[in-house]
Image (tube, helix red, strand yellow):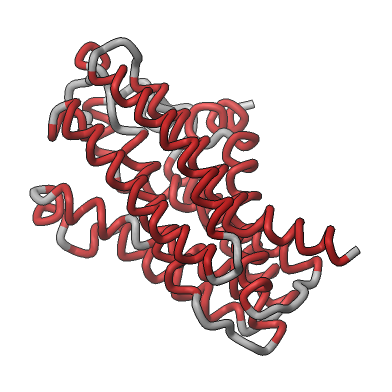
Amino acid sequence: MRWWTYQKERFPVVAHGLLIAVFSACAVSYSALLRDGVPRAPSFGVAFGVCFLFFLQLRIADEFKDAEEDARWRPYRPVPRGLITLRELGWGFAAAAVVQCGLAVAWEPGLLWVLGGGWAYLGGMSVEFFARKWLKARPVVYLLTHMGIMPLVDFFATACDWIPAGEKPGGLGPFLAASFCNGLVIELGRKLRQPAAEEEGVETYSRLWGMRWGVRAWWVSQGMTAIFAGWAAAKIGFAGPTWLALGSVGVLSYGVGWRFQNRSLNGSWIERVSALWTLVLYLVMGVVPWWLKVGVGR
């Protein structure tokens, strides 16, 4: 029951699982489309399992990293209020790593090298790259360095396809860049709040830059994501539908952002649209074009 409460508050399994499933399936599908090959079914399962646990580990790492601040400013969270201990979360992190290793080795041992790269970066993030005060004083650098984990996780998911196939496809760069920029969309989107919702000791981009510039940064990150996504989609002959789909969500984002600035909507709307944007992005960059290819092939 304690773990169930923890996941509801800090890592909703269903909501996160849906996005991660689309995220990982997109990476496998995109890799296969680039190399004009056919991914084997286990690629999807291994990519999802390892990526899901990677994002869980990110959450657990944050619990350790922010423990002191949470105890002071956010005593309502599970760890400071005693629902779950850091020791228990540490064992959970280790168990997740064991499962990740097992999945990687069972499918393709060569995946361990890619997995190790992701773990190394996660380790650096956990200790703020040994420059916590310096990074905290530079929020933009902090944001950019921490989003570096996104393309690494996505790269692992693509590797679940191309390492077993024995051929690394060219052209992954724009796809990974889109993943990086989309990480900014998610991170900015979850830290934009109305003044009445701001909490003492909680750093948000609406407090740091103001609501207007916070929303503009969110819009810019979406624009950059769309540019790289369109570039990536062009490599598989799917640029038009990608631009159309992201443009449609972009119109919604503009309207929601505008109303947020005018204090007509609260920050939860920004977060919801960020999730919708992410879902559409990974559907049109890999899942949908792969499904259409398979459907046409039949």
